[in-house]
Amino acid sequence: MATSDLYYSNSGKFKIHAPIVLLVGVGLCTIILGVAYGIGLYYCPSVFLSVFLPFGAGLAVGGMIYLVAKWTHIRNAAMIIASGLLFGLLLEYISFMAWIFALSEWTAIIYLPQDMQEVLVYVAVDGAWEIVGITFKGALLYFAWAVELIIILGCAVMLPYALLKPKAYCENCQRWITDHKSILPFELIHDPADFKAQLERGEFAILGSLAGVPYSEPDYTSYDLSHCSVCNDLHLLSIETIKTTIDKDGKTQTNKTDVIRNFLIDAESMELIKELAPGEVPGLDDTQVDAEDSAQDEPADNAESDDVSSTGDSPQ
Ligand SMILES: [Zn+2]
Image 1 (cartoon, rainbow, N blue to C red):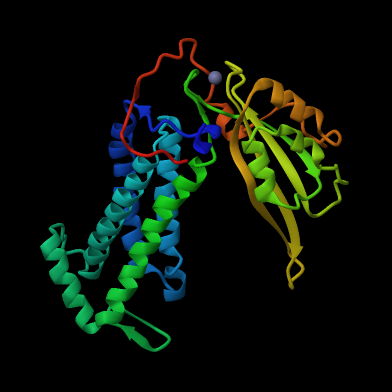
Image 2: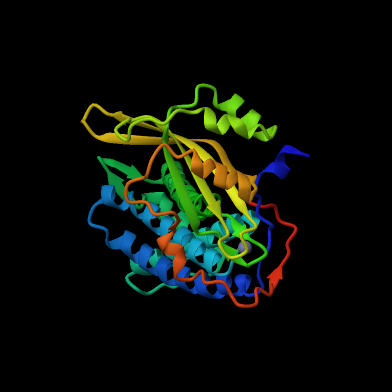
């Protein structure tokens, strides 16, 4: 069996209405957001403050793509990335239109690319703004615009991709997996690569080799079990190490590192792992359901699929 067969991977499918909702819903919202962002940049009282606006706009676009992808059951990484690039570019273009409209004292609406190019070249001659005495014009201005575009595209692509990547989907029941149980804390794993290799060889006994540690321990290992509670046919194990550090300002920082993510196990192995729990986890019932997912995730009585397959790759 190939190693990739040991892990959950998305099917690359999506609901038939997903592209329409993306194009119409996210497209329209991106146009409105682009207008607000462009005018916001023009009126922004501080150049330093305006540096943060592209992050906000890009994350807003990425957030919309994530919500639509979850709602329309998109299990296709290529579609998520393409949407981020498409709507990120649309946001940038519309924001330039709005910004030029404001710059021209509400007289010039430029929508053709070649006209846009001419206006931007004209604006770049004298510069668009000044920061710490340096006028941004010519090559420096083009560079700043390029950085702005990269920030927007980066946020619009990475946010939905990163949020959807760890999510598993039960193809039987046509639902995202929302049932999780964390089992912690165990001692740190000395050799994570070897630990993972043993699991991949089916040597599950290694799971019981870690001793429990007190809850006050800042560094520990956590087992996360997730499963489809409807068909009880899909069980996944993820293991991560959690290390807590305190920086020079006294702030606590938690760093999580995956040892193994979405490893396929059977129901019996899942029960065995549950029995390994060092003790009752405070405030954690037997099963914890993702609050953000639970409302929209009631399974349909008939889990008939209106999925569309795609040749695109999958997030994992
Ligand atoms: Zn299921």
